Length: 355
Ligand SMILES: [Zn+2]
Image 1 (cartoon, rainbow, N blue to C red):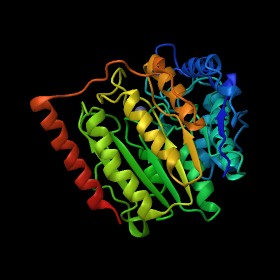
Image 2 (cartoon, rainbow, N blue to C red; image 1 turned 90 degrees about the horizontal axis):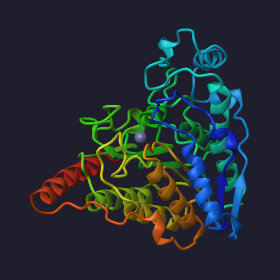
Image 3 (cartoon, protein in one colour; image 1 turned 120 degrees about the vertical axis):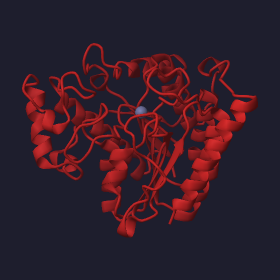
Image 4 (cartoon, rainbow, N blue to C red; image 1 turned 90 degrees about the vertical axis):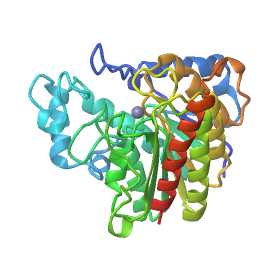
């Protein structure tokens, strides 16, 4: 396997605006690219930039209903009409905007390009930080997500007969990906997230285990609000390594939204760059070909520093101190005990749900 690391980049996936006041700002990726350029990341051995291609209609329809794709195409050309039946609402989470179909084909194609790079043996890992849009459903946009690129990648890999492990460390439950593979054992989905009791989309409890052949192959670790590095890493390490070892996937797909960061304005987790570095090092040290994606992340500075750090780890490069949080939050005393007890319960329930 190559030691290289692919990085999907194109100005065109960073220019679109959902709505002026919308929290998802694709322009955030420019900060990541600029930081990595300044640090010389792209000059390092194994670093290579992948220009995304547009996903094809067939690829999109591997997961999405053709009628929904038609609606997105219409909304893209004429955003002022009513598409609320498809989850697209001007003042909702996912507003229709001009060009949305075309740019979503590119963000999805970026994830497919990362997948192809890894399968061709050109990279140990390839990452598309414009992807990871894990909430999109078969016939409905949801939670800032139009086309579900992680589900499309997992499906394409499964179609090649590969066993896929999908690990989602965004603050929100990876509900769209879970739904796409709820009845199959060919894609194992593991989502660690803030509990649906306190955060969108309100799902992701341990008893959502899959159905039929898929029973036990949907794993949910529902963490309490205010989970810090210590409790988060405890949950990650108790669940992810043993289940990957048991499942023995042919390929690993990760969704690395950085909205669990303690400065993120939309969520209540308290994770820092330090815990993230540990998790990304774990992914890197697994023997599996690895396709990585971005996801949420609404503190632009946390996005810039964390995703830059992660790509350096993927390259096997040192991480400069400037990218790390100086004083990550850490609970003590009674609060420590409460968070740890709730995290332990989430761990127990998640492990008990597994096949
Ligand atoms: Zn999120």
